[in-house]
Image (cartoon, rainbow, N blue to C red; front, side, top):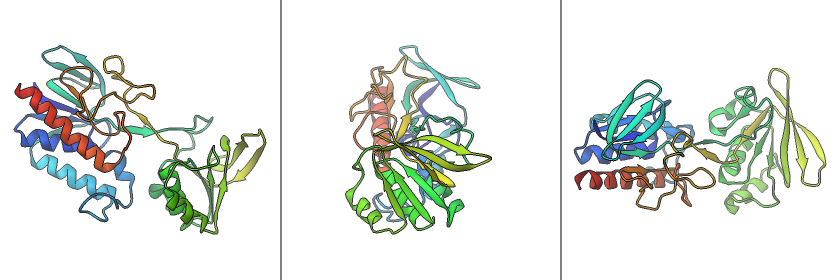
Length: 300
């Protein structure tokens, strides 16, 4: 039996492991895919204290090495269920069953999809959720970005230096993201704003050829693009826990800044919980808090 099982090896989960190991607790991290989470897709992190510029991959690798050096275990297994046994918890994976005195859920959030026909089939064939990952495949080509937050704005700005033309499509007439980035985009000759519109159809043969865009007045138009970058938010990875843990209407785990859930001994950290700001710095802060609270629970 472990003192702490952490579900997810993103920045929140790995930071929690550091704090757990420094408190001399046994720690197991269970990760479905690979360490790093969404941050590995970030080309350049500019807003994290001390490191003015570092790639997401380098950041995650340094964090991973620190976790391993401290003696935490990482196993790559997808968690399918948590069972509360009161004095301990059982964590079911696709391969095994583990027991722990406390659990920290740090599963993060996945990319929200448009829900259009052929969307999944066209991932890697014109559809992308990461401009910094895939932008170079579309040099000197026409592309579109859909979304209205900071991610969409930053994706459009990044692509404007690579692509021939960038269409920025937003369902409203104003963007939610930083106005300073909007002003930078307005200065780019190859960026066109498409307001009050949604992408309603993907047209493709073997790869994406164009998109149908529908305005709120009902009119439609076809925009030829080779790439569509979707940046409409995230979906929390909490489906397997919502029968045990309280979640809000959007599916995020309900917890305050102490990172306690409604189940004693189960804590939450990072983008998977309900909060105002989802950034790298808040994920690592959550990891530290959740592990500290877990240690208090264990010691009591």
